[in-house]
Amino acid sequence: MSRSHRWSLYVALLLILTLLLAACAQPATPAPAKKLEIFSWWTAGGEAEGLEAMFTVYRQKYPGVEIINAAVAGGAGAQAKAVLKTRMLGGDPPDSFQVHGGAELIDTWVKTGYMEDITDLWKSEGWMDKFPKQLIDLVSHEGKIYSVPVNVHRGNVLWYNKKIFDQYGLQPPTTFDEFFQVAEALKAKGVTPLALGDKLKWEAAHLFETVLAGVLGAEKYRGLWTGQTPWTGPEVAKAFEIFGRMLDYVNEDHAAHTWDSATQLVLDGKAAMTIMGDWSHGYFLSKGAKPGVDYGWVPAPNNKGLFMVVTDTFGLPKKAPHREQAIAWLKVCGSKEGQEAFNPKKGSICARLDCDRSKFDVYLQSSMDDFARDQLIPSEVHGSAAPEGFATAFNDIIFNFVTSRDAKAAMEALQKACVENKMCK
Ligand code: GAL
Image 1 (tube, rainbow, N blue to C red):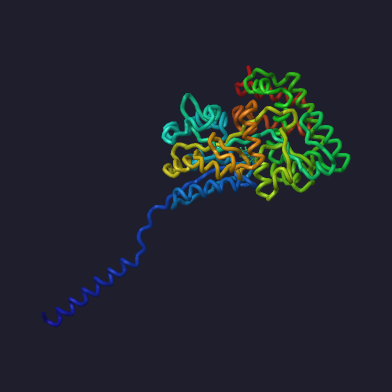
Image 2 (cartoon, rainbow, N blue to C red):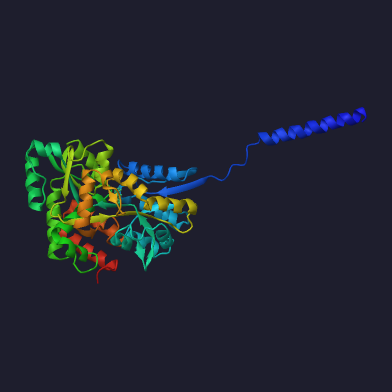
């Protein structure tokens, strides 16, 4: 081999080596990241911790998936629902979203064709006999299932500051009469009797629906959502009278508070009671308060034997960008492990029937007993009882009543909304 040939060979070898080194130095094309975007309104104390606990179970089971927490703050979805609507209608759905079982799921999203039928998932996961039939019915339409309930919250609970009640030798009220006696006694001591935070409107409507249930009882209360019980009748008038009297005992700055800051008022001893769903229990726990020591609970006045059901569920929107990861999320939502991680923090009981009771605290065990024994009634404010159009009108009408105190106008407006939304004739 001539000298020049040898040189050419060296140069060629050097070139190949350089190219090889350069190729090795190039980072390998990264595999497309697996993602999961979950939409909810769980940002308050108890809510955020519960959601995170379910994410932890997901991460253990499906490592390598990046979870995008797309929560929009604002209790009861007061702000989130509008954001969700814009996204869904704009063809930009999250992979899965929080939605109440009942009308909120079925009327808003199923009948309009936005959700996938997940009946096969229910069957393949063996869930059909693991959930109460009432809950399956709430997430079904024409024999098909559209979401997975993760919990059962109770809407009609009165929470009270134990130290205040002990200090003044008071018993938690179980009837409307007792409520007003206790409220008077507290007022005389200079303590705000009832904490309310109706900054987002729904919180006042929430209080009112517990009063409706307490005055009407299960059957007539159910009749409100089917047109059987008129909104202009004497029972609803009575409910407005009681509700108006209750409002005389709330904190003056109620319009500046939300459900969670109102719950905090009770924890701080700045108010003695609040009437709210048991997400308040989740809130108390997140602040390190002890059930039965720092705070106690009874059913809302006159609500003994009635369990107002609020169930959070997750479904699969059509065109979910990460469908495979979304199905895996639904599997976690429906699993015993997922529900046992989520609910003790969230302040709710499992939607499943086979959760381990010993993983739940004294309040939640009492809620399990009541759920099994009580009459189950739907919540309107939390999506189960009536279509969205009525729910929005209801919140507005009750919120206006808080300042106007005009029961006649409120009742007529409710009847009109009932007709407009095809619930009443
Ligand atoms: C409800 C929801 C609960 C709780 C509450 C306050 O509508 O079902 O999970 O989060 O709102 O935000």
